[in-house]
Length: 458
Image 1 (cartoon, rainbow, N blue to C red):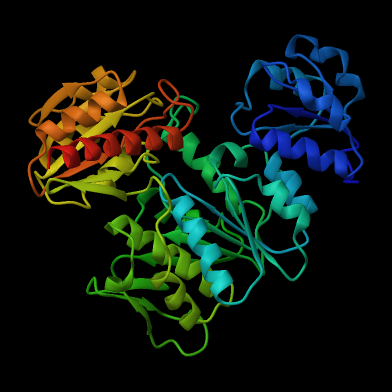
Image 2 (image 1 turned 135 degrees about the horizontal axis):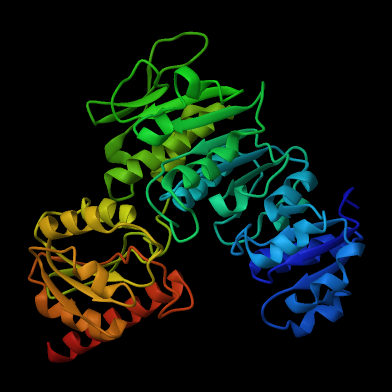
C-alpha cells in the first residue's frame, strides 16, 4: 500500500488511467474511477465507476486523486476535486513512489520518443536490465511497479505529466528541446517551458541533468541566475564546441566527449556517419542519449555499438516504398510545426511533396510556411488546419484533400522521379484519425495501394 493513496480517485480512463487503476488495486487501495464515458468493465477489478456529475458524492472519502495526462490540471472536474482539499497527482508521481530502481526521465517537444527508445537500447546493449515506459506508449506505472532495485527505468515524460508531480525525482533527467506546441493548453511558451522545467525541480546532489545548449530556452539554465535553478550536476551537449559543452560535434563529423571530471582530454565516441537515423535533428537525439548514458556510467564502446544497431521507430521518417523513382516517407508522429521543419531539412530542396495538416494545437504556422515554401515542390493539406496551413505557403503549389488516400494520389501526381513524398502533418490526428499511428497506417495503406496499381501497369 502506498501511504496517502489508500482511497484514490483515478481521473480519465485512457492507457495511463487504466494502468493506475490496476496497480493501485493490486497495491490494496480502494479505487474509484471517472471518465466522460461510462466504463463497464471496472467492477470486475473491484473499482467503482463514478460519473463526473456525481463526483461530489465521494470527495469526502478520498485521500488522493491520480490524473491522466490528457486532462488539464485546470479543468472544472479537477478544480472540484482540489477544492475539496484532495491532492491531485500525475501517474508518473505514483510510479516514482512505487519504483525501486533508478529512473532516467526525458522530455522535449520533438524527438523524445526516439531518444527514450535509444537510451533503453544503449542500456540493454551495456547489459543492464532496463524497462522503458511513459509517454512512449506504455504507462510508466506498469514498468515501475515491476522494476527491481538493480534495474533501470527509462521514462519519456510529457509536460502534461510533469504538471502534477510533487516528489518525482529522476536519477538522470534530460531536456532535449523546446519549441512551440500544445499552445491550446498553455497560455504562452513561457508557461509551456516552465512545465518542462519541472523535470529537474526535485533533483539534488547525486543526480544529473542533461540539457541542449543549442536551444535558447534551455540554454538560459546553463549560466547566471538560470543555473541556480538546477541543484544537481548539469551536463550539456551542442552541435559546436562550447566552453560549457560536455558533448559536442567536431567539424560535424564526430561526436566528442569532454569528461567533466578526471582526465579532461576529449575522446571520440562515434562518427556521425555511423548514425542510422535520418536528419540533423536525430544527431541531436543521439547526442542527448549518449550524454545520458555517459552520465549513468555506460561505457563508450557499448554506446557506439547501440547507436550503430538502433532501428528507427515506426512513423518517424520511415521509408515506406519507392514507386517509379519516388520515395514515400511516413513521419506521422511529427505533430508540431518544429518537427515538420526538421523533417523538411532532411531532404533536398525542391524535391519534396509534403502531406500536412490535421487538428492544430494553437501553434503559429508562420515558420512552417516559410520553410515549406522554400523546400517543397507542392503541399497537400488535410484536416481542420488545412486552410490555416495553406495560407502561410506562398510559393509552393498547394492542394486540398479530404482523405489520406486522396492526398497520396495527389502527391504522386505532383512528384517527379527522385522526389520524396513526405507525410509530416505538424498537427494532432484526432480530427480524422484515432491516433498518429492510425494516420501513419492509413498513409502506408494508401501507398501500398498505389504501389500495387503501378506494378499492375508494369
